Length: 184
Image (cartoon, rainbow, N blue to C red):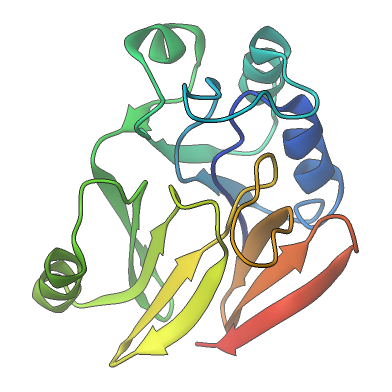
């Protein structure tokens, strides 16, 4: 199993293509954590901003894509995308346990912990903050792939993640290398 995980592309074809042609080149499917097309009122336009080209690239992608709706995704975005933007999350049963994928803007830390326990989540995946995170807390791994279009944080880097049967890795798209890894 090899799943490419991306979030917060915000209309950037550059972000999508860099991930697809880089860390996702051997992926079997892609998970998108939301904020697919629109850049949002608080964000600048990312490099390669072309929402029409991006939805055409996503619609023509040969890989299966599972996606959730982010706070910047609209009804119009859903109309042009062939993939369903699930809201507020989707779950997947994987060899190591259950994964929950959400954009992340609906949940407080207390809610996240309660949901992770209630649904026995082994991998919690969210976006929204544009900051990559990979950490284990209790029996759950928490992953935020960051943003390949509009990175934020103390050390902003364009990033995505790759999930396999045995590990999760965060990739720096500009350096072309893994910068964090956790075994499952």
